[in-house]
Image (cartoon, rainbow, N blue to C red; front, top):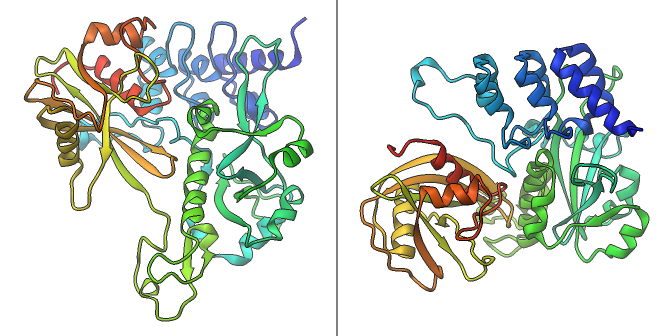
Length: 451
């Protein structure tokens, strides 16, 4: 006998295949956690909508935050399926759902990628950060959601059973105000930030005095007794160590983790004013620290000492002049056989292109000419932005800087395909699909050799 959860997943898939948006809306309103569930063939609701060309179904699923990167047992995404069946309107929606359709004057524009840690179902609503009364009302509102961190490790729960054909999923534990009230009463010991509100299809208002917005908050408690807190919340635990544990989160919540952890990490490192050393107070929903010392230079103008910082990092796949080989390197900390894209921090006063050329030259001795941006990925370790690029080598001799990396090699297209597509990892192991390095390699394999 099929269990109730599987029956609901089957019903969801049938509704998407038939294009019934009324029933789909009802199902998602009550069981949104099923949105990325797959059947025995590995197909998701989005794939069924794409296969049958149902534009409104696909649009609704995307608005609800479904994962576009899921693959079925044939290694196909919903985009692959839509392309195969010739549904150009679905292809355009899946390709440009985040930023809208490409204007006709940008006919050569690349599609916008959405990497792991970059997807979220929250609207940040930065306009609400300065509305202190609104924030206070949401702190105790019955619908508000809190996610808890202990020393920057998130409280999560395992979704799924041993009887399920699918791998169990890890999700952020969603707590309510009364479950964190004890910690909120000690502001000197916790950092609290406003993450945003849930994106809604039709913005319903539950009451005249209620705007209907479901607010999300995150708090970090240093030295929290994990055993004590886990004992109060059955099935919940703090996810650690950060890597590779964070890669287990479902993709639609990974972006929420990235946002929350990056800002909370900033608060943990900048408790005092970096300009004068004075005490600071948290403002703007957690997105600003203001120095309490009168006359401090940080109080005049806009300074990165007062706002959460983001560290830009270039990560690049360098293509051989023949177009059929790529340059990959490995660090001593990598698992056996793993090679990845070269990477490094952008320096002050440096362009992205020049940072790519400098880092590749420093680490491998290879000179790079043309550089092309592909996509980017937030990386909350603690707060980097990985800027993914392709570059074309104009020299091929490798001289490795042993202080940076252990080894660098040219790999043929065939070797990369064997590792990436066919799963043959005898000669090469590539990073997991959650990493932008994996997506850069996949992007190169899928394009022609002419950049």
